[in-house]
Amino acid sequence: MQYRHEWKHEISYSDLVSIRQRLRAVMQSDSHAQDGKYLIRSLYFDNAYDKALREKVDGVNMREKYRIRYYNGDTSFMKLEKKSKINGLESKFSDPLTVSEAWQLLEGDTEWMNDPERKTVMELYLKMKYQGLRPQTIVDYTREPFIYGPGNVRVTFDYNIRTALRHTDFLDPDCPTVPAGDAGIVLEVKWDNYLPDVIRDIVQTPARRVTAFSKYAQCRIYD
View (tube, rainbow, N blue to C red):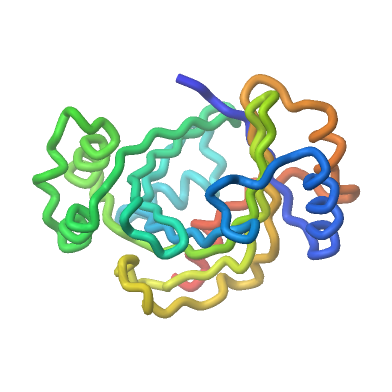
């Protein structure tokens, strides 16, 4: 299992412009980006006791969350992800989903998920059955991604974070969304065993500290 390091900073627009310009000199844009960016739509799961939300807000050392995600409005490539954190390090597992499977899940038909060959799907099935996890919140945002080979570094800018409030029909492209409060721009830096000095120097933002910002938690502010 590969755990990755992660930094998050909430930054200003002027920070974004400055850091982006420096990153372009040494990093490549993600090949999946269109004009340097892509749109992400995620559907997060939680239970009636807000287990995932409370563990995040309380800073629980070992926690996990499940989400379904697709990019640029293209539901032909969709995946269920499980993201785990322990001691500040993260790991991620995923299984692909079809549109039909996503529809069944949204309608409460989960027996198809009882499939040992699909580990992440099976785990969510058990969590839905025994912990009461259910589709909870849609999170939309724009991402500008950069990659760097040494250290397997990924730097992203996330902004225009929006929520669909209590609507969970994330397959509907016309599902209405609203800005998630005063969420600004989030700089994320992820790497494996080491962060090259050239990247470390570029992403330094004076007077800004590493934060535990959560897009999911930010999108729950209207609950």
